[in-house]
Image (spheres, rainbow, N blue to C red):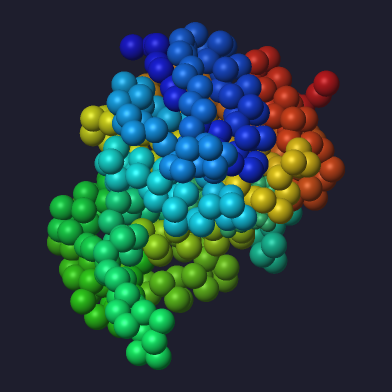
Length: 367
Ligand code: NAD
Ligand code: IPM
Ligand code: MN
């Protein structure tokens, strides 16, 4: 198959600025490697839509998206007008759950040419994947408030960990580690403090490790693990974490590589029963929206992950992915850069420079 349908959801804030650049690069790669893309622009799943309709999405959202091969997604959230839990549970978090995107794969990589906030680190020192559980764990709407408004107010927020849910994300992480040269998996835990779910989670990891004799595994409590992301990043190869721990690690990791503006993510339904969703790790960034200065690389790299996943890591999609990543690398070395990278280029300029590389197959940046 070399023809795919992709739903485009720009969302809010800088989602609307980085989407055109991501698309520009994805289309350049599709053209060069002869991949047919049928694009379906979705004008809902945004806080603007909410303002007009009182909900984030139309009632038939699932029917409208279910036939797509993938969803290419910018960012959702505009807390000035819609509370974040309303906009996110009404869109992105619904997609992750109802399309069973149980893996959130988030690569973390230090690129040549990007100033690293950690002393004496070079490309290669920071190069790992965060595999985040994406459908359960700490993210739930289970619980409630008692004695609201009184001095005895009590709030309960439940977590959910299922054997099915833990085992499938652990299995994915072990498989990924097994296919990497270093074959090392770090399991994020907090079994000292979170006394029910986390000792159990560690036990599921131990059980899964029996099937992967070549993978070395270490368990680290989330507090020291976070410290080591900063102090000893070379220790990490693949890191598997619950939903909330994975969320935090996947902002911290990219921060150590200079900016969160280049971190991509793939929300995967590996069974391919439902569309998978590809988006930057970052959000709608209201503080910089409207200036055309957002870094589009997270969006662009997410597009590369999408093309790779669509062709199951083979053939034209893999070639397109590799060409996009090579173009990102080249432009980061010597091309224009947005302010988060220390430059003064615009979102559009960076997108155009990367698309130019992809289209030409150029090895060095020049205009
Ligand atoms: P954020 O990621 O939007 O922004 C955090 C900081 O990083 C800001 O200072 C911002 O300017 C900067 N930043 C983010 N992306 C950047 C880019 N591409 N280039 C340069 N700088 C960039 O996080 P936040 O401020 O906590 O959230 C803002 C809104 O986005 C909220 O509504 C939040 O719920 C939502 N959000 C959505 C997603 C998503 O859709 N996947 C992810 C995170 C946050
Ligand atoms: C992310 C985001 C989301 C999350 C928010 C917007 C609900 O931070 O994709 O990392 O917490 O999963
Ligand atoms: Mn996050």
